[in-house]
Amino acid sequence: MAGDHPAGYRPIDRMMRWLFTARVGPGLIAAGGALAFLAVLTSGRLFNDGDTYWHLATGRWILEHQAVPRVDSFSYTFAGRPWHAHEWLSELIMWSAFAAGGWNGLQLLFAGAFGVTAVAIGRAMSRWLAVGPWMLALGLGLAVGAPSFLARPHLLALPFLAIWLAELLAARQARRAPSPWLLVVMLAWANMHGSYVLGLGLAGVFGLEALLATWRSPRRTLVGWGVFGLALIAVGLANPFGLSGLMFPLQVQSMSSLPMISEWRSPDFSRLRAFEIAILLTLFACLWRGVRVPPLRLIVLLGFLHLALAHMRHQMVFGVVAALLLAEPIARAAAAGIPQPIDRAGKVSRGLTFAALAVVLAAGAWRMATPSVRVDGLNVPISALAAVPPDLAKRPVFNAYGMGGYLIFKGVRPYVDGRGDMYGDAFLRTYMLVTRPKLAALREELDRRSIDWVIVTAGEPVVGALDGMPEWRRLHSDHYAAVFVRRTAADALNLADAVGPQGPGQPGPASRPR
Image: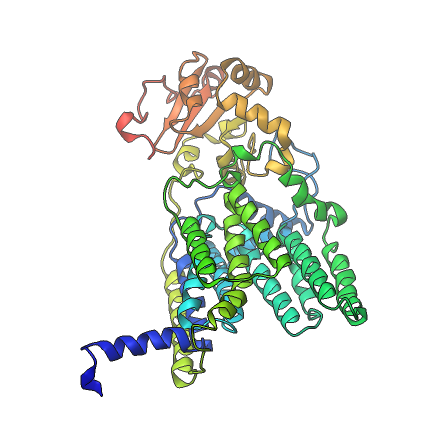
């Protein structure tokens, strides 16, 4: 009887029962996609990466020239040398969105991509997980990628990874070869981002798993997966650079200078972050419930975990892969102690779907109606570059690595930018030596390349080194950047505003970047 239960028991009991027995319906999947959409749409750091700007400039170049770049036309240090614009389709899409809707249009593009990723993951996991575990898995799987919420091609490629892996899992569950429409997915993916090689590898692993499962009578598997595999290789090579495009991601991974780029460094576990929380909670659930993962899938999972531990940029990929691979094993392990999900989709689910769609449309309209103004950032020296006279901006510059993209976007040829794969290890090692700084190497590089001005991050050691060189004068300083001009260039251009190290605008100790 109701009176036999403590006050509040029945609502809590119903809630817990709903969380662990109710099947995830389309409405909840749509709500998850809407929340992911809003997370990126309201992100204040989406455009904080300097690479966004050279990607936009590349898309602009492709549209203007009706061709894919094969040599560098942006920097002065590597002008005319081979460059593979392997993300050309993403860059063209980015520029098209920017040309149509400005920064708001670009933000809508990336928010939409992340929303589609959430829907693809959520739909695949809904086959196995009840509402509560589903929400936790989806939230953690997406949250680990928060450091990579940046307006760059990797975020546009994320939906392809989610759709690809979900379909491979569905094919194995149905004991069939993957659907041919996946080849269309691969065709777009191969021209958008180098992560498509992960898709090729995943297809190979699941094909091998299918073959081992049918080794007594493998003919059907060999035909189905074999034909798909051959077609997949052909589609993977359907990019402007052919085989070299396929090998490109492997070549980048082998570069010894990658640790100088923050996203290629290992994660910092000195503070608790979403990535560590996700790993700990996953270990807890798997060890507690005795989760068993098929050997080949476990190898894949550990491989992606290794990548995420080696490079922060792979945390986002790991979150997607782990959520999809572990949904079924966790559900099977929990089946003995938790009732099978029951279907409660209906009017509530349909209402939630319409509500999610309304939220997305309203948020998109609000975004487009709200002016978006770019401000100074660590890799976006808007004020600092504006202080450089046009005649000086045409002369050779030495710039911070992260600022090169913004310089390209504004029509300035940089010394270096985010295309580290093009510059190569030897050049990047020189850059590191110069910015350490080793004074002799700094002077030699500035003189050898006839550099007349410098724009670098405020507070970096190279700033103090330049302040100590009598042949250089500080032209501008703010919280994010410092600009220096060679004294002879300042005299030739009659730059009366160029001052010494104690001149106006120099940030004092209390105003250094945080």
